Image 1 (tube, one colour):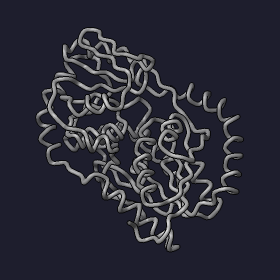
Image 2 (tube, rainbow, N blue to C red):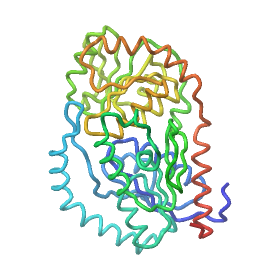
Image 3 (tube, rainbow, N blue to C red):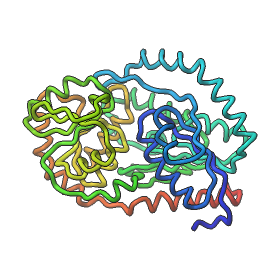
Image 4 (cartoon, rainbow, N blue to C red):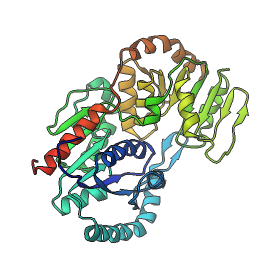
Length: 365
């Protein structure tokens, strides 16, 4: 048990764009509940329903979302959609926070890249802890090789991340790569792993696990079909309720249990540049071919570090089946590099969080 004598009242915010934030926040929230803390959770998007199945006190608030097409973020459509929904979402958020002030009165705020809880903390003079992977863009130094050909995108991404949650009391950053820290009050910890990943039985297999967050990537499907390799595909056909088989392609409806087993038994992974799945693949020693979403520098950063560490390869698109073959030829070298990677579950993360809550309870900035 941590050093505080009684549980704290913690306001926890989870951004809903992508499920990675929700899945890792679940792990932290379960730890906080086990430590005896009282929680009020603010979440947006799909994160709300995901967390509400597991915790009491989950509140839905408006959050930004992105629109994808053919493996790119469509910025114009994204902006217009957020303007339309934001007009009605913001008043609901304000009302929710007035209720929160009256009924909960938190001692400390933790935010996984979520702005409303951050603003609540700043408005009310509360300690605020950031836990996410995005802050690595701003709070660490990155070599020219990582930023090469993307300097403008890097500066835009860094400015956005810097402005999202500025001047938190501390930043806990999850990562499988460890560039030099350039900002104080920053702690790097290994990726947050859900219990199902920690319990997964890693073993060798012959299939590729393919995961895409956006529907309609027909070019990738065409390339995969020409490889002749069994591909277990998630995300491309979100509405399906049973497996659809087309030659060597197996489109699967999402099931957490089946997905994790397909990951743990795969030969390799082909997916975007999202951090959560990449961190899980690294932990399970599965080489990964990363296809970052266009317009998402954070995913480019992840993919380039993945390749730099020797854990996989990065590509902008898959237009030729030979590119998959080239990646598969590199799999043995990636496996050698991955064999040297290890982490002790979530121990370092929990120790960091407990220590920061101790300091907050003691009134130490």
